[in-house]
Picture 1 (tube, rainbow, N blue to C red):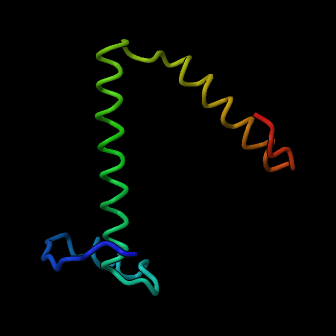
Picture 2 (tube, one colour):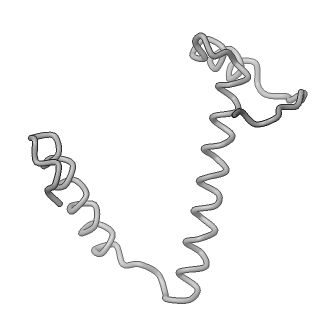
Length: 87
């Protein structure tokens, strides 16, 4: 079941609107913009969550972030080579 929709008027630079329209494909500009806004809301929510976690536990060190990225990349490589259970 899809969510109820509303009609809104927004203002944006013409070049951005035209680029979005040209990339929107068969779903149309409204769906493309709605997906972009939904992704931005997810990013904003994640940023807020990170701020709360860092306030409580302190910032995450760059080497910790890199170690987790390395683990993620290894897991992806394992999946790409048929090791779906590899982590």
